[in-house]
Length: 293
Image (cartoon, rainbow, N blue to C red; front, side, top):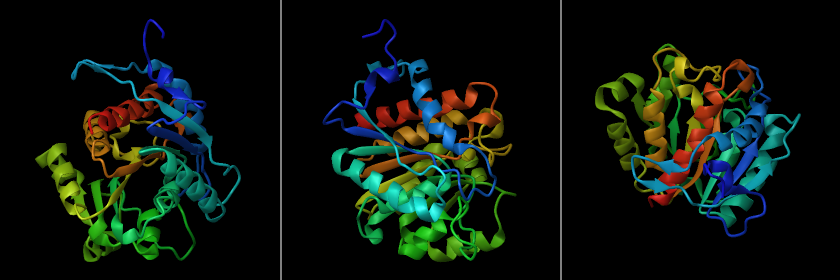
């Protein structure tokens, strides 16, 4: 053990029987805002050594082993071509681990990750922390702007979808109407600001109370741009990063949560280490929530 225990101590590709698996899904194709999200999994792994394991708030040190499952082989693939490899890699992880962390890549990885559960979609709940509805039309194919609509087309009902942090001036009226008409729970950024993150999470969990398993989509552009400059879709007025961490920890603590993804982090956009440290702490919050089950 090092003199300063850190998250990288818990991560190993050799560990057997680990409760948590970490899978990279470095998909960059099909982004509405082209970039280099495919660089995120490797940088996150390197940054884990800078995140400690002791939580001063709880007085506990993280101890859960995490198996590093490497990256799904999706380099140079289109979203359509990458769907199968990501779905299959997630399915293998879900079969071995109680919780799978999927590190994108762009937000298009959310759909194959959810399909990787291998469950009927009417039993799966999707909670998104995202500034966007991700319900662009499918007419021109799959993109990082329509994984939620694609999952709805696959059979995921709106009563199983809760969307937290939806931002003004970042969506269309048609998407909003479709989400509400479909039965999605929509918690806007202003509602979150008035009621607090705990109330928003309570509402989301209540909305998907009937679901057997949960997928949590953490599109990192939900965070205020000043606190997450490495997210191309982030804007001023977004979620405070401390609220994001609290939301992730609470959602990870639900025993039904089987998959949590982190998407839309584009490392070259941030010449500092702020975005990398935020993404690496996401892992700590996921593990802390898992240990609280």
